[in-house]
Image (cartoon, rainbow, N blue to C red; front, side, top):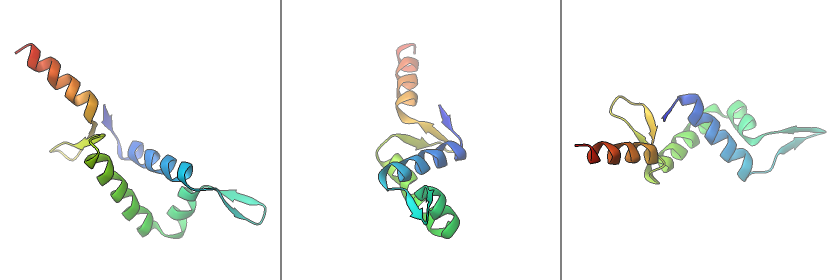
Length: 86
């Protein structure tokens, strides 16, 4: 499976929102991911890149030579099948 930039950003937003409580301002509630993205987009991007590095380091996704990102487990399964038929 190839992940789009939006897929990876959605995964990051979901992780942030699951790990941190909703932010309350007055009687309004906001997701942490939305607040960070709006208040400090540079910090949001840096944390996103750190998250992506963790996904790569944990072998959840890998970066292809063309800059695209793919599911590591699916790729390894495909490589295993290909090796069996060679």
